[in-house]
Image 1 (cartoon, rainbow, N blue to C red):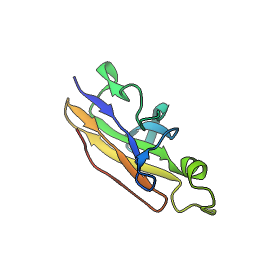
Image 2: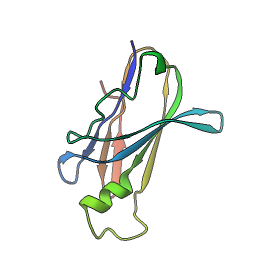
Image 3: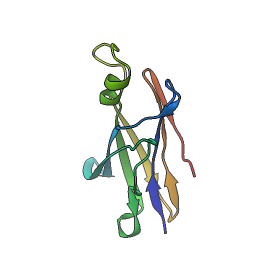
Length: 116
């Protein structure tokens, strides 16, 4: 069975990003339908799969990482507006397998990839 997971690493501090809020949306045409909201644990992960079982379906999804609120807590004095605030990652699920979509985050950059 397929599943969707994520985690967030704070590359500027060299540790998991704890307490970072994430929203998951399904994207159909121009419509975003919110599926759920999550908050990362002390390991920068979500305690359960974001999608699994009956909720795991092919389609286009978007994870929105609330990086600005997290960065305000851990890196005071970044200024406003922040360079990074909400980080949307749109991706497709086309097969019944494990999709791991991590975020590597710093105050002025981020990257992602399809992990395992």
